[in-house]
Image (cartoon, rainbow, N blue to C red; front, side, top):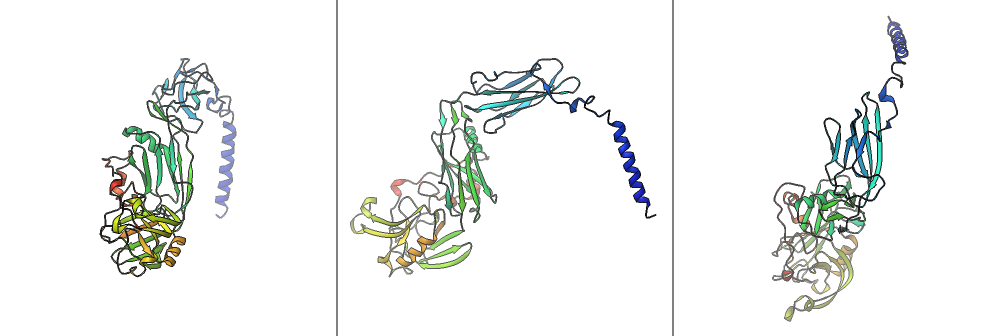
Length: 414
């Protein structure tokens, strides 16, 4: 009984080998057309673009048809020099294939047509042709610059021409490719006709890698506008740093990766100059800034001219976190600034060394206005995710633009 299974295995294998041997001739390349090398199908199919000739109009659809002879088209691939495949549709009879999307301008296409004859033997034809370049190009400037940033840094795309049509906006968005490791959910938001911002649903994961590239080169955006080449960029995301200022408690809590590592007494904007509530993103750092009230419309008894050190900028209108040795007596007790967050020189130096561009600075419990989403820095995180998604041309819903901050209402701070 112990040997029966082994004997059965040997017998089965013998029968299998015999069967394969008996069928070897029937399955040979001489009788099975599917195993043959594809024949040249050049005399069986026609393509409406001249191979290797003068560049063709990319607006003209690509079409492949059969010439009869009982052949049928089984597949068509048209790929440009960037590896982008042209979408198309094959008829049920296999006698016609046509493109269903516009070809890219200023590029070369390689078209491979697969066929089969009446006996089922495979044929193939390959050809190349160039498309004429576009006279009008949409330049896309991607931002920020490549480098290391905090978890709150949005991505930006600045367009050289206004794009208003929703279908054209969708083309632009599809061509702006964002990749992150680890992957996260994110979306573009049209700030205006020439500006897009991209952010994830939540902050970028700490220590993640983010890349952004434009795949719009040659792509038709409108009848008279095609995409231009653009330089890609790569961001390295650092620790999750959040600086949370409680204007009512006159205190700044500094967190790294969820852990509180410092609590700093501060002063924020006094009545009439109250610091804006909400999430802001660090725009940059300057060791020294001369701050003058008269250059930003503050005069009279409120005017100032001060040398300021260890200045971390969070709005374009002049809100900083910086050293304020003149208000040390008020720090931790009352708000006396013109809108900035002030702290001692020692604390400001520590903050300056531990904060980086793209880190999150949040103000709570201020009697001031809310931080605007756009126009005065990066207030993107103050838009609810549901509303943010509505700012994309690829998602259904009404797009409600958050208007940039009225510059006349910006209050300079110190």
